[in-house]
Image 1 (tube, protein in one colour):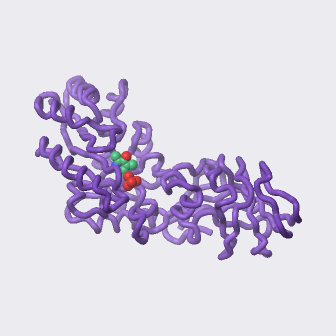
Image 2 (cartoon, helix red, strand yellow; image 1 turned 180 degrees about the vertical axis):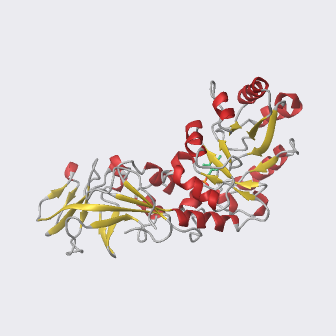
Image 3 (cartoon, helix red, strand yellow; image 1 turned 90 degrees about the horizontal axis):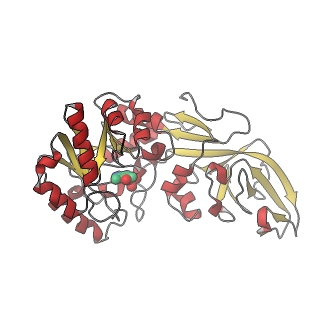
Length: 375
Ligand SMILES: *Cc1c(COP(=O)(O)O)cnc(C)c1O
């Protein structure tokens, strides 16, 4: 079943990003099935890891998700309309100066990351004349956002500083959770257990996708998976427990044969050594198809692997399709999909699946399916 689409429209030249909402919902349910009593949120920041938060958040809600995490106020506003009033939206970057009225009016819940944000949110509660919900973030080893333990201690010593705040969760974030035997994981766990004990009335949230797989000690009351919802392997040293959710198919614009000593692309970085069929395909780094895939990445024509030769350019890539003599202008090749899971593309691009997905551009025609992936 194909839902209404987004993007530049299904022109013949369009590269097509297919997002399987049913696969995302199934991944959500499979993660939740690993919990014993903890609730399972959905992290849909960065536009649902590049795949479309406005479509994904309601699909997760239909699968039973009641808690959604985004990074920015704007991302929270974007998904608010598609969710029911009881479905909580938490904003990880917190409430910045001048934003408190919009947070309160649109029922968005800030993650408070320092004492200044705590102060601003209690002031907002006084001004609005009602208790306002919040999450308190304690840093246990990222040195990124969150209260330093010394600030957490100061706050706990003077509970009036939280007057007017309905403290829903105390949370923290793991630095090395995808490395199951990294000693930093149990060290952060001990620190978090001690910190959250300062606020015994609040629930606790600790694990991201990979943290779920570290065991029940890491689950607390609410887990916060992102990458695993979208098909990125949360256990990189073991087989992927989640399903792929996105596929990218690009159109062949031209096929030609060249002979030595001809070269391909900018910088002449690929020189053919024998008669070679080159297919030029409509996807480039302006679409998020990373330039590090130059002379390293590949695509599939049917079941035939065809390497990227030459540099990835702004709008185009060039494939050696000598092994696929049937390849013709107007046909499509798979850049990501059944033969090329997101993590395989990431490895070829020398990055992580998170970056591959979040770079996917607006120039693709997007098709949302529920089940069978569109061709
Ligand atoms: C992005 C993020 C998550 C989700 O992490 P994944 O590794 O994608 O599961 C969870 N919590 C916080 C604080 C985050 O920033």
